[in-house]
Length: 368
Ligand SMILES: [Zn+2]
Image 1 (cartoon, rainbow, N blue to C red):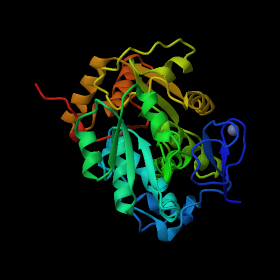
Image 2 (tube, protein in one colour):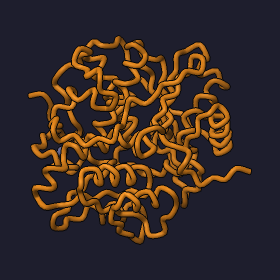
Image 3 (cartoon, rainbow, N blue to C red):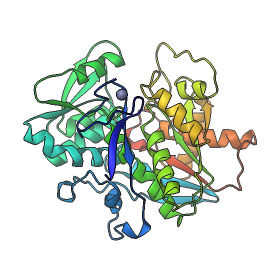
Image 4 (cartoon, helix red, strand yellow):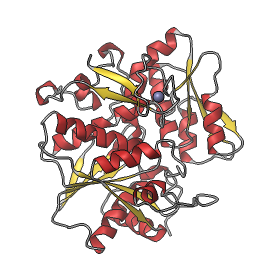
């Protein structure tokens, strides 16, 4: 057996690639790999996520749906390397999850004369809609009723059907998951294959640095797909003896949306009534994967940092003035790095990677 999809809580194995939760206890599923990463098995002429196709054994070669995602630039600025995930086809790192998820499922869904559903009015919704379009698959994207803005426009331009739902964010998820004829829920937060696609990012960072991994990796955290995927990828490389140690993974959150920070530091967290942060892609005040994230971050000897609104804005501007136009949510990771430098919790001499997750072209901010 090369891999297994298992419940992260009770360990029950899930036979279906379509399942998004444990068939016995309803908790999140995760992909377990039972093979080593081998540098010799990289497809060196492929400059997409699929250069690592040999490490995604559940995807059939002929069924790959790609828009050229992955192999994004890693640009240095001294000892800091910026990973430009904003340059993915739909403008965010989510394309790594979408290409793996949609490549695996599109035939199964089409053979059942079905369609896919997702709940997201942001980058994930746009990414799933794009890959569904590329696969010729119908997608229904469930969104809160008052949603607007560039990301929502992008979802519609890709041709997804929009379902507006009144009530809170959890109501939107509930509607998207509700059983209906032909519907296959592929929500990016819960579906294990979406999260699993993100591990390609860890492989890439390691390969681009000639397998000398950085000492620290800073990344923004909302629902935890990026965090869990990156940790799992580096862990796979360590277990395969390709790299010696895990980098320290630093989970970065805004004061408003910081359930992981608080839980990790054993502090109590009260979410705001309404999230008004400029980091508007980070919205998960009550993430379903929270326990799993804390567990992964502890196991990986990671850390968590929380930043303030003015720190995010300053980091966003500073990145733009260096030529990196990313969304304010991506600037959260750079803001956290700067904060740790100032507090002497990080050193300029350490090799550090900062993941810039999404493009600035979708921002609603206006210059003064
Ligand atoms: Zn279970």
